[in-house]
Length: 534
Image 1 (spheres, rainbow, N blue to C red):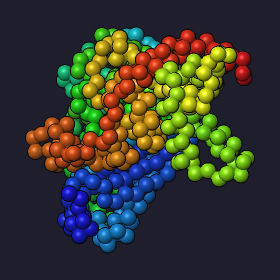
Image 2 (cartoon, helix red, strand yellow; image 1 turned 135 degrees about the vertical axis):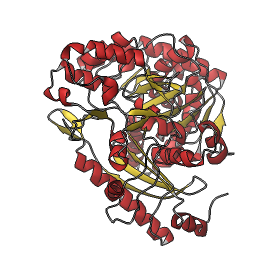
Image 3 (cartoon, one colour; image 1 turned 30 degrees about the vertical axis):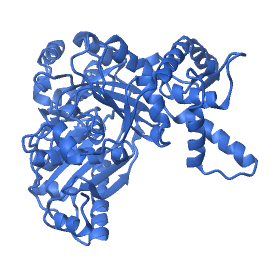
Image 4 (cartoon, rainbow, N blue to C red; image 1 turned 120 degrees about the vertical axis):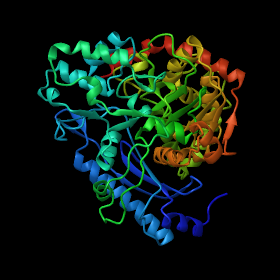
């Protein structure tokens, strides 16, 4: 039962509202939720990373001014809607984009500018660690950044007393606690799902690897302590309250949940933290996350292994390209219509063209397209060239043309997911889709169901995003009552809200499989386009 305005006002005044804040790559978003876990107010702050001396970074000033503005805008929203101040909160949670490198000395000084996940400067470290650990270590992971700094002979490394992530840094400054949620920690260093902590064998290997450097620290001494969803992660200090709320209205003492990464909060916001569930986020880029029943048989370069906020192993397939080329083609049709003097409503245009794709041949009638605006590591491309190609006898119709561009938006993703689903025989009971690809009702959903050969659900709430997800993790900490996170989400948050579920059609599944064979064979055409078109 949704809360009414009077109830919400009382909740805020009684200090029972819960706050979640997430640092995304372009926006810092604050979401306040009520006792029914639904959003009641929000605020945001836009920010951009900057390229300085070849490093993608955000300054510490950017972090704090952005956080304060986002919080102040949420408070303003509360004041405008309910006419009250925010003095106390029941719980707070912080989340941010994962990975990257924030290193501090014993006096808490930042040793080098924050290196974000976007930097691809750790290739040597990534390859050597992946080989040594027999576990895929992507370039963006914190351990790859640390080892690359060692390989580079960077002077600051000997002085490291603490290394953390963006979410871990903000949490530490507000509470004094050097901790991370296990999902976030899994993007720093591999996690042993059996213990819910960093993998001890790999830690020892790393210490042995760098022993000749004679640093004063061991890896376990400089990484944050790993916590699980529901654990107490410290309380807001008086200094922390002033850092968050510059007006001084917010009081100290609020408990904080473990800081989590954007992957974990996305799982929570789509109710996909249970084993054999998954979610696909499809917009400019696309990624799939599947919660595993058991470990994979070996390491794959195409698959990153992270964890849920409760420590279950999660396989992640991440692709750089999804809807950009599709959107570019829709804009061509917009231009065509306007050339005829017809003004077009973009939502309607997307709806008409996407639905047209459902009328096409199951395998797109022999058409082939690549949506590579940028490189795609899963298929081995460092650069991309959007491409459309057909044979003289392909079935070239509008329906097949739209269908092939929808199929190819998930082409690289399917290549990675096929390793999981076909080679590793991973079982998935349901996938939840969220992001721009699913805006046109039923179409992206049907195509994804075909690509994954799995039922796909789309929820109304999926658009609430990670700030809501971390608010729910904060709520779980204070309201769990001995329940698992899965049960809390099913009973208190998503009760009865399964969204719209769509089963895969067998003809679509077979059609997508035929398309993907052509897609793989045609990668040589994409390679030629990259080599020839400079």
